[in-house]
Image (cartoon, rainbow, N blue to C red; front, side, top):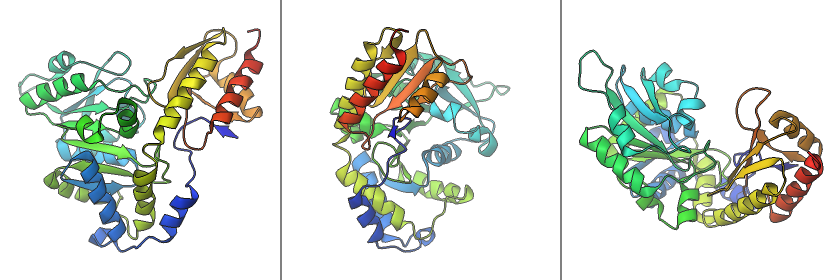
Length: 344
């Protein structure tokens, strides 16, 4: 099968499997797993932060950050289509006791002025703003890269009001490779950030939360409360270290494959394709089958794609390129789309 549903479906490479099998391990809850410690040190170095914490998933990383930064009864400013708001199971309300205040951005991006207007006045009968969250790259917006200048303006506004800013940087390395800007510069000024090892970087499990030493010390406590304390986790951390050493620069191949895929699909008359900035291609079906119907037809031909949006009548698909989809599979996918939609 050609699996374009997500970059989370990748399998560990042979080199990554060897690194996992040979990993030196200890009990990470005691802080004694040397491989986990090396991963956290390397993550802090790459991002330019003081410390880092290995967590099982990106959702846990984001939710730990929200719990550390906020107090129950506060609000969190997010973009309306953000991952934290839409697909993290309302955990900010369930675990941290905070509620979202969403801004409807343009293709996933809001402005500093919109943040300024969303910050609640200092009135005792209003929930106060406890945190601002950004997402880079923005998943639902087709892997859009958050413009650095706008991010810096938002940081200035939030910090002027004494409000921390967290970055959901699940795919921050895609943003870095696409722009040529180092990750440390893209995340400069953020009070915390999370990045995923198990998406484009190809590790089977794990994300890393980064911030100040004080922030990470509290994050470690909150991680334990969420059930994220792991024991001989070096087996997993070894995959993350391998990914950071071997799989960052090759993200450019995924971006190029996404462009080729988008260009090929854009030539089909019944499709409208958003030009990708990184490795996510959004496709709208203007007429003919629904997204679910077309996905089922393609599945029978050996291609897996994901409908974007809820409901059986959704007309958008999301296709994500990754290290397990070579160029010939991209070209094969374009051909199969043509065969299924010819004459529509």
